[in-house]
Amino acid sequence: MSISADGTSVYEASAVDDAVTIFRRNTATGGLTWDGCVRDVANTDPGCAHAAGLDGLRVADVSADGRSVSVAARDGRLRAVFVRDTTTCAITSDGCFRDVEDTGPGCVAVQGLDGPHGIAQSPDGRSVYFPTETDDTTTTFVRDTATGALTYAGCIRDIGSAGSGCASAEGLNGSRQVQISAGGSSLYVAAAYDDAIVVFDRDAATGTLAWDSCVRDADRPSANRLRGRPGPRRRAWRRHQPGRRLRVRRSRARRRRRRLPS
Image (spheres, one colour):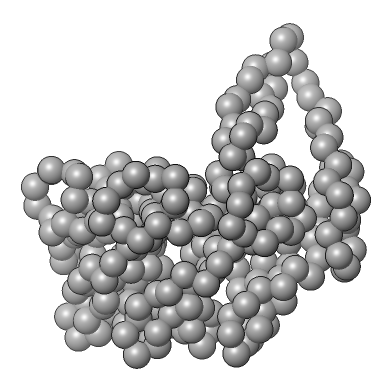
């Protein structure tokens, strides 16, 4: 869910309905009024407009200037961008990107979009970042502040994950959440399977990220907890109790769950 900076509208992402739902917000009372929805083109349920790139929608985010809405669809390995009318709050599809392994039509194929889980937009509105749980990446897009259009600018993948086309860094295994500092100089990514928070330095002029450091849970051994160059990965199974489920790494960072014997 995301609220526009002017407080006049709310955008909700629905994974079940494959849709972005729009609400008008009363700035005096905070009350919401339904104002339409946009559903994935493959979903034939009535009542919404349609656009590509919304299969299994997980998160929506309004830009600080209110001119665009970016969304991430984890199940479809997609991300889409909408142009937002700042007067009516209506949104119009302005294209989408998909992971290179996805065969769906209608979107530009790029590296590092398998399992997008969040969105962070820079305060200056010129960069958008997506963490991906399955690809173990942080993927960067450059945003045109005049039109809201996005251009793919590259990705950084966990140092222990298979795959090509991205730079490598420690601590990104199972990337799920991303936040950018108020000044836009730092980006933080939380990775579930590495039990880590990764810190990136951000170039304010280009939006490019440079790995700075990572902080990992004290129970998880790491060759690299301090600022510096990423070191070799040390795989470690966490202490478990009978019946506890653990994630098992597979090729292309895909995982299955296995129940340990009691």
